[in-house]
Image 1: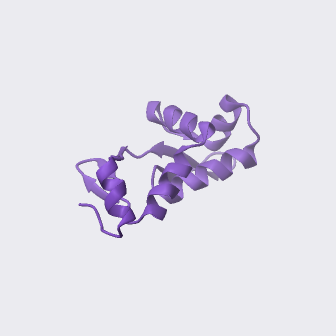
Image 2 (image 1 turned 90 degrees about the vertical axis):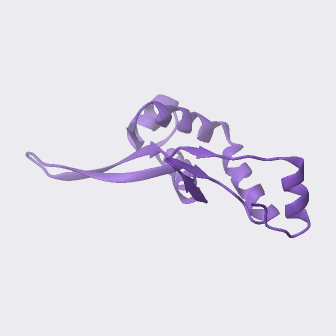
Image 3 (image 1 turned 180 degrees about the vertical axis):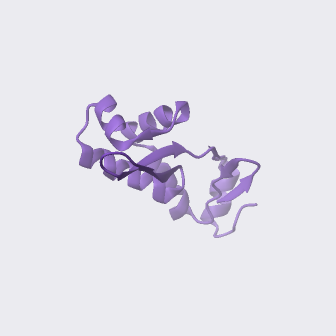
Length: 113
C-alpha cells in the first residue's frame, strides 16, 4: 500500500494479495461499514446498532478492515464521573485499480507498477 496525497493506493504484488483485498471487500456488511464511516467516524457500538448486528460480529468485520488498511481505529479518552476509553473508526481514503493486464502480470509473478 502506498500513499498518493491522502489516498492509500492498494497495489497487490501477488495474486494472493489481490484476492485477499477483494475478499475483504466482498462482504456486504463490510461495504456498508465503509459507507457509514465515509460519512463520519463512529464507535463500534453505533455501527453495530445501526447495522442491527451483534457487537462481536461488528468487531470481527472492523478488525478485518483495519488490518487490511481500509479503516483506522483511534482511541478517545473520556473523563468525568468515570474515566473510560472508546475506540472510534474512520475510513481511510483508498483506491484499487484492477485491469486484465495487471492480473496477467501478477499471474506471471511480475510486480505491477
